[in-house]
Every structure is written in C-alpha cells, then in structure tokens.
Length: 163
Image 1 (spheres, one colour):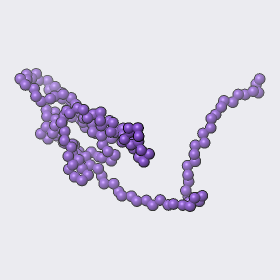
Image 2 (cartoon, helix red, strand yellow; image 1 turned 60 degrees about the horizontal axis):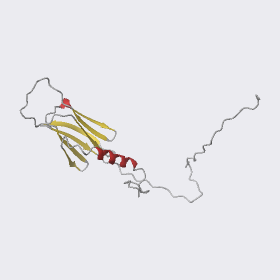
Image 3 (spheres, helix red, strand yellow; image 1 turned 90 degrees about the horizontal axis):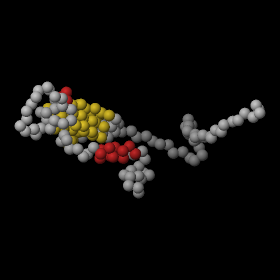
Image 4 (cartoon, rainbow, N blue to C red; image 1 turned 120 degrees about the vertical axis):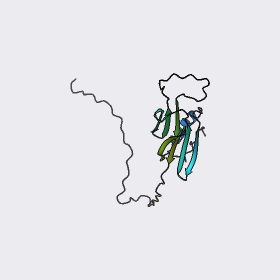
C-alpha cells in the first residue's frame, strides 16, 4: 500500500475525504482561540469558541463548501488605553472546521465572551432499491447503455487538386 489512507480498490470515490483530512491536519497547529466541540443531540453538535474581548461586529462566520470558517478581527474604538498588564489577547484569528457532507449550520450566538455555533445533520431518508439481475446476453426492455468512447485521431487533409 502506498501510504494513502483510502488506497484500497474497495474504497471508490473517497478521494475527497483524503483531501479533507489533509486540510484539517494543516489547520490543527494554532490553538487560538480555544474551543470546545460538544454533542448536544443525536444529530447535533455545538462548537464553542472563547472570544473574550470580541464584539459581534468583530466576528464573521462563513460556510465555504465543506468548511465552516470563523474569523475574528478587533477594531480600535479610537480610545488610547494605557495597559499596566494585557493578558486578554486581541489578535485577529481564523479558525476552520471541516464539515462532513450534509452537515448544516443551525445558528450562532455570542454570550459572555463565548461564541456558540450549532450544527446538525438532518436524518437521511432510508432508500432501498432492488437491482434486477438479468441473464447474460439479454437486454432489459427500456434499458440503455452508454456506448464507449469512439474517439478517433483526426489527421489534416491536404488538397492535391491545386498542384
């Protein structure tokens, strides 16, 4: 095996999962702001980020394809403050969470310096479909198969009648 997680021929169409895992691994190094992820229901999650000192206007949440991106950027309020000790971070941040297919955002709110984001996965409908097995050489009525590509190499034609 070549070191690929989904390199087995039994895993068809899972290339995007491998890409998501790589993307998630790249963003795992920065621990600011600290956050919790909790399960709040069978199909529900809540992400809570500690964003002390940030106002609602300083925060932005977007869903870009399968990523939930939280950005924070504090703006100066114009006041010159003299700090004797500055222990509350006021730097900008961007935190990205890779979402599984079908995860939806339920809402977000800021409460006492904590930003809460609820996520949920709607219950999919269970679909069972019977696949008909037919005898080799027979065609099922109404069934159409896509023909294989019959691409040909085209060569330029030279006109010899003007010689």
